[in-house]
Image (tube, rainbow, N blue to C red; front, side, top):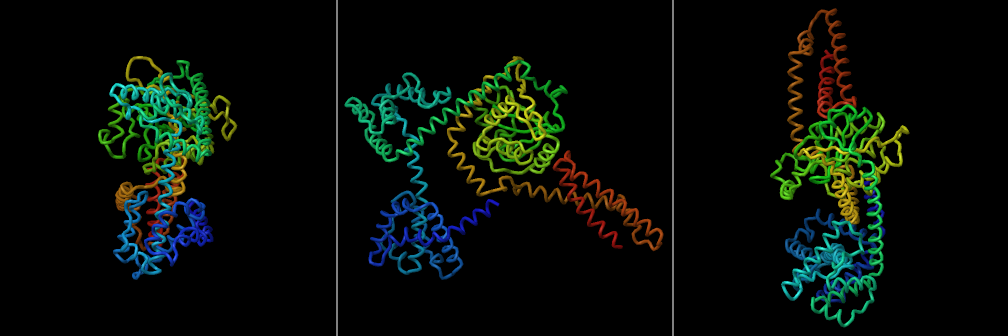
Amino acid sequence: MKHLLLKIMMIALVPWAAHAQALTCSSVFSPEKTVTETYDSYLKKKLAVMKNTTALQHLSALYTYNKLFAAEAKDNSSPLADKRFTEITKKIISGIGSNKQRLTTDELAFMTSSPRKMKMFEGVLYYQAAMEAPIRLLQQYTQYSATRGGTPDFFTAPTAKEKGLRLMQSLYNGPLKYMLLIPHGIDLPGGLTPTQKIFKKLWRDPKYRPTAEEVTTLTKYKAENIFKERQDFLNEHRTWVKIRRVADYALNAIIAVSLIEAYNWYEQLNDPSATVESGKFLNDFKFQLASDEVRIYNETVPFPHMAIEMDGLVYSYGQTHMTVKTTREYVLADVIQEGLTQGQAPEQTILQKGIAWTGLDKTERVMQTARLKLGQEQKNKLKRYLEMQTGKRYRNYTLALDCASMVVKALKEQAQTDIPGIIDPSPSQVMFYLGSLKTIGAENQSQQPLVQELLQVRVAKSSENKNHLWRNLYINMLETRVYWSFIGFSAAQRGYLEARYGNDVQYWDDETLDYFKLWESEIREEFQQESKTGQLGIFEETLNTKDPEMKESLRLAMDAYFKMEEQNLRDIQESPQSRFEDIYRANLRLALLLETKQRMLKN
């Protein structure tokens, strides 16, 4: 549906094409100008032209040029078939974001030697300008993102001793401050470097004029030009600065709300009985799920990960594929296999090497869990959906579309459990949200409490009875800060992925499809073998009998047999307890059975 909407939007953009071209190429090129003047004029004017062109006009012009190039690609007499034209085009495109790849006079003359080449040359130049737009935006964003900070004084400090001091200050008021969850705008005592103090005044007042002493400081650290550039940028982009300030206040507010949610978790889990040893959790009947319940797992170490359990099985979207394990296998695993690439050993993945290097693989797993009562129909639908995704690869992008996103997507679409999409890429935010739902008594579709229980499950690696509640909540908060700090980029990436792939976010990869072919051959061979030696074989042997009574009895027996076998296979297909392997096998066996039935009953 999304792809259809995009196509409709592109078709609707066609009326803007002529206007967009008039704003771009036609306003720059004219017969009176020489080739060199034309190209140089374009290079000078294209940024202004692009700036004055709306996003719709950009899309429309690009759409028109794409149609032009698609048509030319089918024509053997097109300039695209000319090797030199192609080489010069590549040279232009390779110069995106740089003026180093300039064309020679001969190359310019060749590209504009005919109206047809000129038209395509305009398209190439427009495409170059369009592609440079995001590069320029990124350059501006780099300035924008650094509007509050100073310069890295440890690079420009005059002595080694001072370089070390400035480096410690940068770490103290940078990563350390970030990890201490200190809000934006608040600096640690003694944490600001000499230039950062000046740049902070500039951030508060873009028209600030440094004192003579401050000018000396800027000069000492070679930051006077950066100060001027930053000041010009702040004054030229006042709206951006306001947005940045609002974003800072919003992030601080979100962190404050998350702290309240973390405290809510603490209040519900600070009792020792709220942390259960893995052995008791797996064997005590009171922790077993009812037939209409599921349990959400959130790992904090060695890395954040979310999975969902029902009917003794844990469905988990790993680094590359969706996998299924028994609850016992998942809970007692020494290594979280979800961090591995499918089919690889731990030592073969960068992630596992990093985990081993940091020692996180030796920390105790204390998982946060939330037991949800969905209702029987919703839970059955959810399970069938997850079973049919088993073994699929998915497009995993951390903080945009990841394990938590896929679990929440399944809950929302299959079990009508509403969790805000803005937080679903963050396992910690999802768990905080579920904790809040329990506190306020949110209900499911059947007007029963949705969140039945919050629990920590400790997979013991030592005899010490530690619940690691504070550790988990700190990791939750740190993950929350990272997530909301990059929400703009993550949301844009998520929108792009959903627009491009739609429902193809999960798919069968070639390796799995090859396995299915082998599996299908095995099932066919197994069915054929049973057809020779089993009940079907007996029917085959007596199928050509000439005795009318025996033939009629045989027909009745075959009809009853096929009905029974067909019903058994359909029961497997429809049962909410059926596994993916059973469903796949039943689908193929049913097709083979119906094919055999049609052949045998014809005789």
